[in-house]
Image 1 (tube, helix red, strand yellow):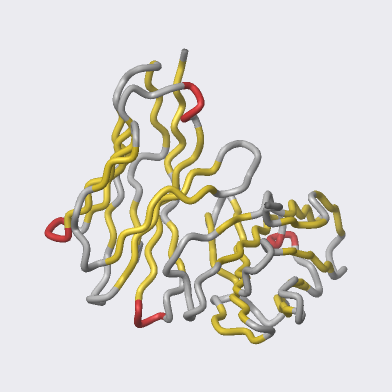
Image 2 (tube, chains in turn red, orange; image 1 turned 90 degrees about the vertical axis):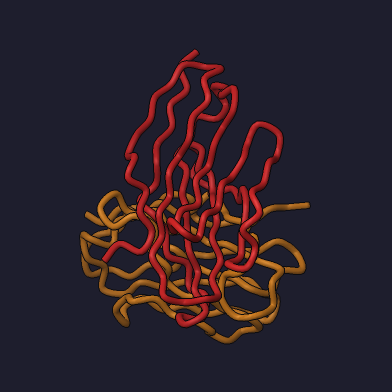
Length: 115
Length: 116
């Protein structure tokens, strides 16, 4: 069973539009971490954010914001006023206490920002 | 400071051969983990090392192995290569000392292996 689901395989928007990337996770653990990473064409994954299961506060960092909702097991990522440089593949990931915090990755969402 | 360095960046092997990939973590990082990325299976965890000890292992056959040296540099080895081993192999280092991935990982650009 998919533990981290990123249902959007690819999203294409025009620059300056807002875009939300969805992430739904599945866990029976009470202690877990959720992450978002960005993978530009160069290949290396770049850390964006980490949330633990006890901290449901939403976070904003510049044009990026994250909405963590345990009630719906979702950890969605919104880019406001998108820019061409935001084009990349974005991954959501989960690590759970019971599995010694091994990272489980979603399939990724390819985001294309057109000028 | 220098990032995570992986070598070689690209390599081509034939079935049955073996390959060794190298990873130099960020200075001061003692935790190193490895991931395989393929179009079909996505990103999958291989193993994690800390202070020369393997702390976690993913669900891969014994042909995949790794080690870590006293300077935290790590290598992974794949023996008896199969076509399905063609992938981008990513290494990541972390400052976090507890086992597993609970904090920020710093990734290298990966080693792209093609098996013919």
